Amino acid sequence: MNILCFGDSNTFGVSPLDGKRLPAHERWPGILAERLGSEYLVIEAGQPNRTLVNNPPFSGDKSGVKYLKPYLEAQPLDVVIIQLGTNDLKARFALSAIDIGKALEELILAIKALYHCKKIPKIIIISPPKVHEVGSYKSIYAGAGKKAEQLSIEFKAAGDRHTCEFIDAFSLIGACESEGVHWPYKAHKLLAKQLLSLV
Image (cartoon, rainbow, N blue to C red; front, side):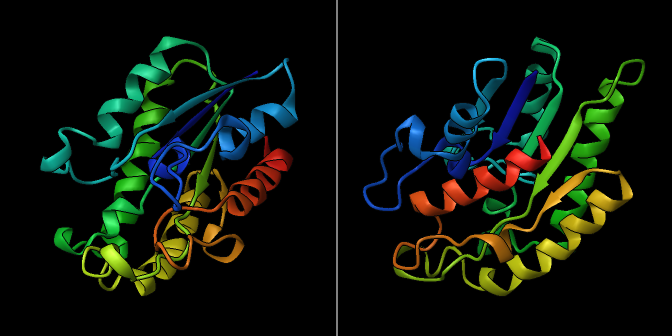
């Protein structure tokens, strides 16, 4: 079984402590692969700053839709896990939760369109957990704390409309309270445990 983990820096595994990449056994795709065993291929496709809606100019082209297609075409996939939305909450984009939810829906439709004559992989959507507006992220994510809660509602609704599985990460896990955006090891472990039952 082939499982694609498509997300942002929290799928990539950026540590809230030092900004470096967490080792495989401490980031959720790696934990998931370890728990599932050798009969499963877990493909890690995390990219810091990746968005659903915009292409951050300081990082080049990070748009989710553009970069997902090559992964879908590269090999047969049984499960696609989407962990995006946090970067779209940045204040400078001025997007509402509804805007971001619509972008997720477009991504789901793009996946289904690519598989129009084939079996569509199971799609699992992970909503962003709470963002803490602190430290260097205070102004970057101004207003994101409340918006992330609304986003979990929009993501669930999109998932329901398109028969996708949904994990409410806003209720399940949290970003590091002192750093604000990236997840501690405990959160990665909790998410991987939740995914095991869905995969």
